[in-house]
Structures are given as C-alpha cells and as structure tokens.
Image 1: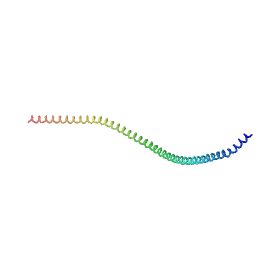
Image 2 (image 1 turned 120 degrees about the vertical axis):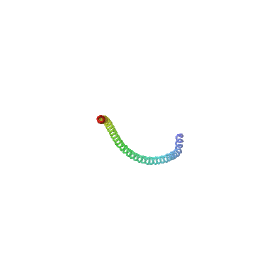
Image 3 (image 1 turned 180 degrees about the vertical axis):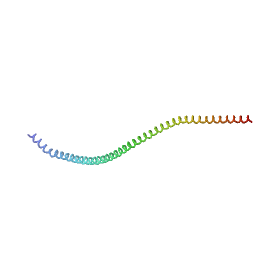
Image 4 (image 1 turned 90 degrees about the vertical axis):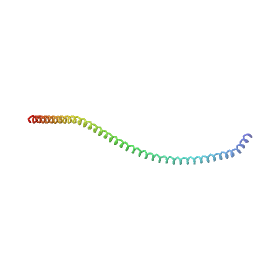
Length: 147
C-alpha cells in the first residue's frame, strides 16, 4: 500500500503541473487558432475582393466581346455588300465586254459592207468619168476630123 500512496502522492503533485502545462498548451493552441482564423478571414476578404474585381473584369470583357461581335456582324454585312458590289461590277464589266465585242463584230461586218459600197460607187463614178472622158475624146476627135 505504501506504493499506492506514493504513486497517489506523486500524481497529486504532478496533476496540477500537467494540468497547468495542458492549459498553457491549450491557450497557445487557442491563440494560434484565433490568429489562423483571422488570417483565413483576411484571406477570404481578399479573395472576395479579387473575385469581385474578376467579376467586374469579366463583365467588361463580355461587353468588349459583345462590341467585337457587333463589329464582326457589321463587317460581315459590309463584306457581303462589298462582295455584292464586286459581283455587280463584274457583271457590268462582262456585259460591257460582250457589248463591245458585238459592236466591233457588227462594225467590222458593216465596215466591210460600207467599204464595198463605197468602192463600187467609186468604180461607177470612175467608169462614168472614163465614159465621159472617152466621149469627150471622141467628140474632140470627131470635131477635129470635121475641121
């Protein structure tokens, strides 16, 4: 029994010391936990601010993308208009080219006809001039021979 009394007495002295050490450790852990909670709270506040800034940035980016999409749509309409104008210009050029080719072909054909008509007219005039010149020569010859 003496052993148990001795153990009881030792534990009687050690228990308040161990309790005090445990209480000090618990206070240190509590202080550290409080500091950690404050740091987490500050971090969460910073994260909230960053998320809010990111949301604002994303909102601005969405506006920019919407503006870019509007410009792309406008550019698409402009490109279609330019394409239509280009196709119209090409159609006009092609039609004009065909008209010029037809005009030149007809003009060439008509030119040949007009040239032939003028040449035949000039031949007739030359023939008449020859006939008249021949008649004058004959009449001169006749008048000379009569003299």
